[in-house]
Image (cartoon, rainbow, N blue to C red; front, side):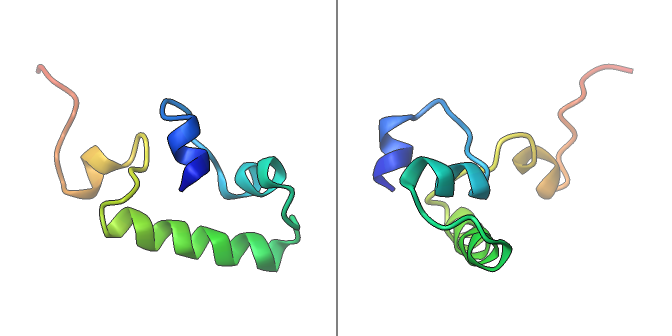
Length: 64
């Protein structure tokens, strides 16, 4: 969470987060982090850029 606090305007992918923190980047470890980040997103601690508006069925396209 500290990394997200230090870079509030940056969106991280799971693998990028591992690289930034010096953690292993093997697929299994990254998938575990991806799952945990998903849980934090569902609980409202994190947001997922570009997907939140359509997840709830909202249409962000205005007009016609």
